[in-house]
Image (cartoon, rainbow, N blue to C red; front, side, top):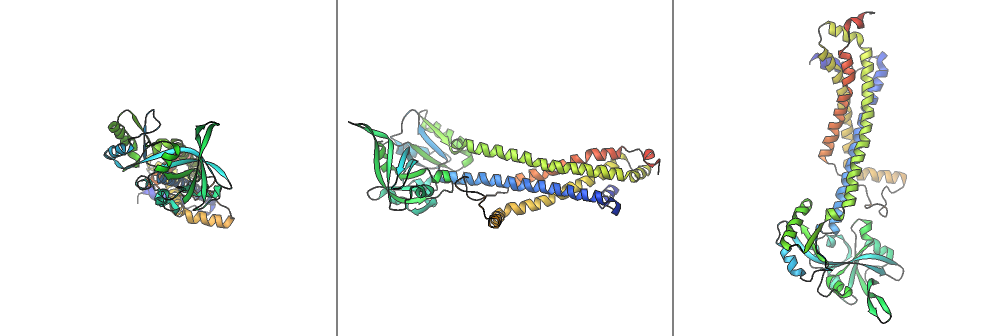
Amino acid sequence: MKYEWFIGLRYLKAKRKQAFISIITVISIAGVTVGVMALIVVLAVMSGFEKTLKERILGTHAHLVLLKVGQEGMDDYEEVARKVERVKGVVSAAPFILNQVMLSSESNVSGVVLKGIDPDRVGKVTELAKNLKTGRLEELKKGEPPGIIVGAELAKHLSVSVNDTVQVISPLGTMTPMGVMPKMKRFRVAGTFYSGMYEIDNTLAYISLESAQKFFGLGAHVTGIEIKTDDIYGVKQIGREVRREMGLSFWTKDWMEMNRNLFSALKLEKIAMFIILVLIVLVAAFNIISTLMMVVMEKNKDIAILKAMGAPSRGILKIFVIEGLVIGVLGTLLGTILGLSIALNLETVTGFVEHLFGFKILASDVYYIDKLPSQVNPMDVGMIVFTAILISLLATVYPSWRASRLDPAEALRYE
């Protein structure tokens, strides 16, 4: 072992009269540990939020939507769907109708987005079939009154269950001798779905494509085509290919554009949280600086003797860099172990905290999700470890430089 490592590691073990320096060393290690642990847990939660939101949004909505420019809808949608499915990257396509209506029951009323779907094809572009809590998609095509599937939260709000009836009221009414009258029709609740996102579960309802065409008076028209792709992050390029195939009278909108504000806010928040929590590591770095400065002052005589024996200034600098770096690496290692332990078992930890204090950390009617998600991203962990060690290394520069510049004659003058 080189003398720089031997002496640097020995200086970490304080003697009885240097116990205060030892305490500051422990505090420095603890500071780095807490900072790294907090960074790993918070960024894992932020990544988990983003992943969960993507899964739930894409479970309800298609990756890509094709619409016609300057028209209320498209009438040749079957031919359009066949052309779209021939585009590279497109897995499947299905028509849909979208409109805003009022839903009323015996006990309540609510404004919702009513979506007309093809029950036989919607499962190829969304995860609606998997999200059903009660009922089946095939029920939308059966019976009179026709079926409707509502979100679980919407069903609670309207106090309805399967086989109950609701009134669908469209503001786009019909002209009568008495003026414009809203269009109304009774529908039978054929099932409920749960996406895990309160906003969707409380504002969305499904009916069959045929029922939507009749109710809204669209004839053979639909609003557009929903498209599922083989790459959710390549939808922009696939969208360009679809537009090139279909011509200038069509335009596309992908899931990123439809949820741009949400994911932009999440990304900005993740960056802000990283910057804020790095400050914890910076505080620990100041502790490292103060620890090394005190060691340098305490070891003036030792440094002078080493330099008198021929130790170069670079060797003295290395001794204190090694000491500070060991503090930083040890704190980073402990923080990484604790942070990963919490992040990988976050559901168990939050469950224990909720049970212990008797409150719900995430209320589903306030937040998009009802439990704290976690996804450990190896790149995030690597960036945190690198940043913590780099800050610890930079914290050693000034004290180590001061030690290397010590004049042996000056230090030993009064010894």
